[in-house]
Amino acid sequence: MDEKIKVFLQIEIPRLNEDVDIASIRQRLNDHVKSLIPMINIQDLMDWSLLICVTFRSTNGIGVFKRARRYSSDKEFEFSISVTIPNDNQALYGLSKVKEAFYTPLNDKNFYILKFNFENYNNLHEYILESSKLAIDLAFTKGITCNGKKIKFQK
Image: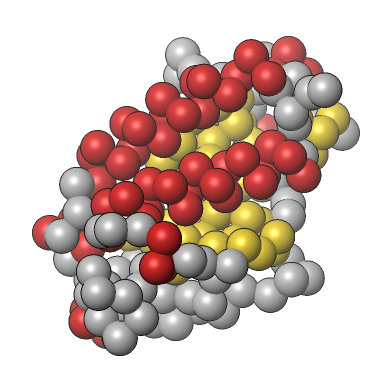
């Protein structure tokens, strides 16, 4: 992997990719992360990399998992972000198929939780992209511990 920090996406909402351009969101989130790198102590990763797994799911907020997973064989750390997708009762652009998905609640013991603001967005693509960016920014504000070093925004 060439990038030290990379975003990948997981979808737990049935057929979400039929309603949202997931490839575009992935590219824009990776571009966002690249723009943050000069503000992060990336050198503390040394020869390791950091994967950001953003999962779109039926849940009760936008959450950043407080702990990173370590994959020594690949010299990779991974941390997870959960982004709630609105159903058709929660937002005008919400999807009825969200009700088909398995509901996975977040808790403040394991996650830093952001409240979702469906009304601040005009469409599902915009909501998903901007909420994911906010969660990534929160992760680097709080810091992700990798090999005993907190990877985070520097002052």
